[in-house]
Amino acid sequence: MVDDLPEVPDQTAPNDVEYDVLAPWGTGGPPASGLWVTDILGTPYSCRTLELLDDEEGPVVATLVRKTRRNPRFILLYLHGRNDYFFQTELSEIIDHSGGAFYALDLRKYGRSLRPWQTIGYIDDLSAYDEDISAALDLIRLDHPDLPLIVMGHSTGGLIATLWTYRHPGACTGLILNSAWLDLQKFASMKPALKGVLDRVAARSPHAPVIGAGSDTYSRSLSGGWEQSGFPLPAHLEAYRDDPAVRGWVYAPEWKRPDSYPVPAAWLAAVIRGQEEIEKNAHIDCPILSMTSTRSMLDEKWSPDVFSSDIVLDVNAIRKRAVNLSDCVTMARLPGKHDLATSDPDVRADYYAIITRWLRAVCP
Image 1 (cartoon, rainbow, N blue to C red):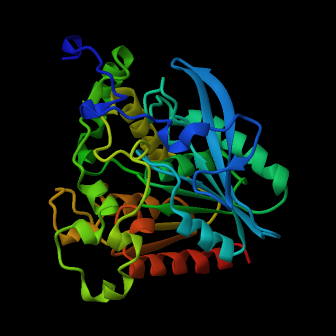
Image 2 (cartoon, rainbow, N blue to C red):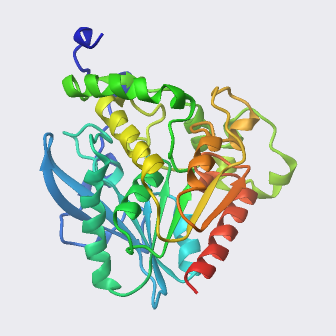
Image 3 (tube, rainbow, N blue to C red):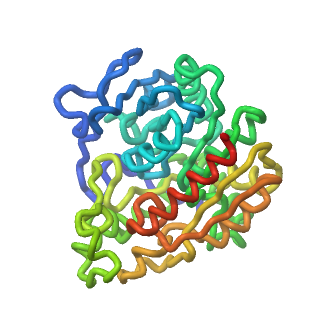
């Protein structure tokens, strides 16, 4: 019952783990606003803090990361997912080789934009991200005022990118979705009832956790790779022993936490509202490339299949929703992980080849 809700716990340190969210910056700390500085990824990446309006937790910022390129023919702006931030440099290199100026936005309260006084990832209305994206585009357009814009989003970032593109007709030349969270998968049939309960809980205790932090299965597959999985390395990967999918991806656990973190009621209610908007109203006026894994495996069982399945979202639900988003939708399925950009090297090669060919058609 709503009346029996417990006091909201401190969600900045789930499972009693203390995270110093400024640690990845080193001794220098995050950059001051109004100044491009070398990013934590090192040269040729730079980043800039974007000041946003304060919210109930205090000052809010977003962070724009760029990889500079001479004479680009288009712009690509990348939005990460939940419990995530931009670290997939291989993606930026592919965009650069395809002729694009690459930018990534660490949204408010995520990654480079997370501050110690904030609840990681928290928001109660997805349309608030319009401010983050608008601030980023204002800066990008100073460098490239007339180039075509491609927006790309992964998981929750794909949901945010879809909603933004729908609300800003004519702004985008194309939309790329990597396992976009467009539907609530296994809870779909319960969505009306679930939404009613969530709205009531969120109205009283917006930060109340409605789903726990979860398992570390997905993060184990990323950070440990095949090398620490306990499974034999597939024969076709023998030549790739130095690949991050084999030896493990390197990223900041303060910003991409091993067991994620609890899901607040108001945040999940906002996601459901966004998904309903897409289901009922959204129609995108530009071409879309939607990519998912070939299958989902949502039981989180530790097996070799975690390296070739989406163990976070239901790919069938994503594809069902994505196919009707626009009059021009290209669908692709690959035997990779939830974030296809962290899949095995042969899958990533196909993933990037699809993106490259699609960009060549959309931005000739």
